Length: 138
Image (cartoon, rainbow, N blue to C red; front, side):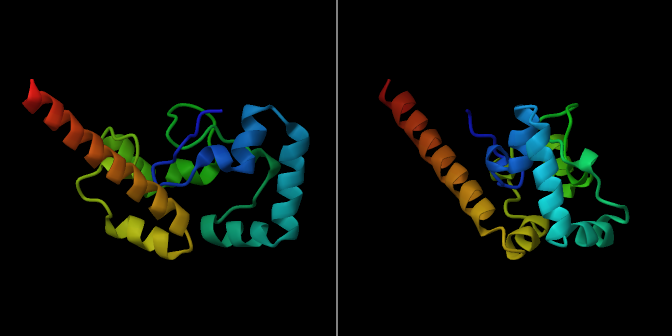
């Protein structure tokens, strides 16, 4: 399966909700929902978003995909909205990287997301440099 990177650097394709959606696995959706509720995430969800967490929230095709089913929060994500507005695949390609929104997000224990975006930026810089070298050699 191709790796899907969210705008913020989270690897969507590693997410159980994404996997359950892609595979049409309703049993896994039910397990995820029960795990989230039993783990107290339903209460946290309600405090954060002002509504009850339901089984229908366990659907997501990943945040980079427009006009598809996505986890409820993704539709309200400022980082995603910004990347889509700027027509960017993810925040690693933004001239303002890392913005205050991302820095706050990384500080909330999303260190792996930062690492992912930093790796994308480093690879993009390397490839751009190589392209310049090739063009200058011609």
